[in-house]
Amino acid sequence: MAAGFESDALYIEGWKHVYSGKVRDLYESEDPERSHLLLMVASDRVSAFDHVLDPAIPGKGAALTTLTNWWFDRLDVPNQVSHELEVPAEVRGRATVAKKLQMFPIECVVRGYISGSGWKEYEAEGTVCGIPLPAGLTFGSQLPEPIFTPAYKAEYGDHDENITFERVVELIGFQHASQLRDMSIKIFKRASELAEHAGLILADTKFEFGIDPSNDVTTLADEVLTPDSSRFWSKAAWERGERKDSFDKQIVRNWLLENWDSAEDPTPPALPASVVDQTAAKYAELVERLTTQVA
Image (tube, rainbow, N blue to C red; front, side, top):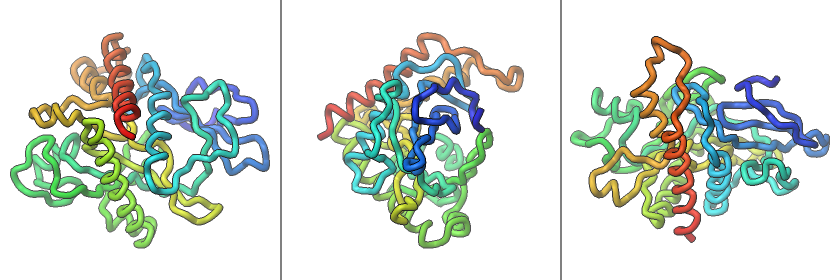
């Protein structure tokens, strides 16, 4: 078994399974002339607090793939998708044939609103990832401008580490660090404009980039602007002051916080059917709102 999460990877003719993460399974082409290609398969697995949970969320893999490809088609930036080969039938709808990239070890996080771990830090220090913010913000407040709060990508099983822009420069050089920051904020602003047409607010998100070895171009990679990588809110609900109901797996996190003491039992309990159904509905609603309400 390849390194990573112990998954139920499929046998797919012409592709060799090489890695499984918490959600995705990666395969390499067995054709020597296509060794520069990956098959990225999004599973229905759901993770929270560094654990893969049981049961999976039906339709989740298809939702992630549909949205990533939908965004790729609307963002004016090079992306990882390859059209050299068709997606195999057995994973069609939840997989993408992609170019192998030389990945940067950086999670390019952009925040336009204050929430999550950023809110906890702001309450204590008046900052988010060390960046000073204006006084008087409340949970869910819009920031004066989107901020770039990068993280260092940890090895499998470890936590990503929030780092400063200066640390990014040390890791990948000033030119690449500045490029990733500027591209991330540009994409965030464009995505925010498109989401607004669907009555949605993009509160925060994370991007990953790599260098395409065929042309040395910095390329947007992996999943993009999905419920797993982003926090979307209903704009109407936000305007009413409702700031915690997001289109993602927050329902799962909330249930675990209320029903699981990880200090007593390191294995999380199985999710009840109601939580699974509500989470699946959130993913499906986000796909529907974006893909049918935005040109």
